Length: 413
Image 1 (cartoon, rainbow, N blue to C red):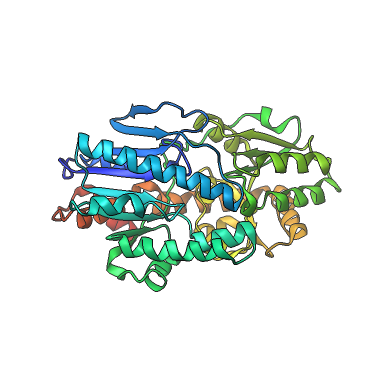
Image 2: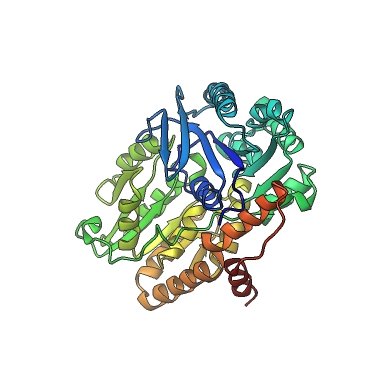
């Protein structure tokens, strides 16, 4: 299909490189498949250091970043540097080939500053709302002050400048309408559905179990709000009564070193392995080996209203899940997960152990989650919503396709 032929979309992301940012890469690939020219601006990070690269026909422009912010001032320096490079590269790309849409992916809520000058030339700004930054700030620093009020101010400006907005779930759409003042008709929910091409079911590899009977897995960012400290407390509860469980933690982030040090201090090093940011092949290999997967996100308002990619990835690989009882996590997993009392690490540990000791229930939960992904939550379904949204943003008349009709029939069933 080439209904977007002749259209050029510039995607700007600040906190992760492409193609590592899986949601953004799926969006970019979908737009490319529809015939659009796609360019991406993102930071240079470990493993993604080329200043320019073309992958699958998508142009990727990477800029240096002095540091990955961990404090308020650190974030200010990081974001200021990113804004400079984003505007400079946007201008370079625009002069090379005019783009029709700037698709800005937060955090932070500052990419609208890059978009404003180009709106004078008829370029539309689409805000892809990945994180609710005021709540994210509270989750990280647990206080309201100057920087918190700056977050709320920049959020309002972002929605004011945006012509359209993409929300990752219904909670985010409500924020766009209620707090951002956007018309509901200009906000489209596009969930971060997992790609079934990337997440293949395999037998896994017992080497990750380190000789133990069971493997519990976590994949995702390692930051303050992700609750890895709570997970370590739960692991400590488990090892008091048994020593047949190994834990694999896959991912990186600003708190990785701190969590590794805490693991040593809690005498859990022999039970916990940190794999860092790894290739998709290794990630899928680890997850396929797991008996149970976990989402220990802290019970903050940010986590309560946010959809976590890791949950759908676990489900796509038929894994039963343990997480805290939070709104959007429950909306995603439903019966594929057990839900611990928010912040109760003992209850979290007990639910993990219950699943390990009940293989049939694990399998049934895994099957439920897998079929939920296949039938409703995979990127095959969400990508069609993105395409329909871009038809509206680009003012392209809708043309029904066999694929769209098939997906609509599946959803209605």
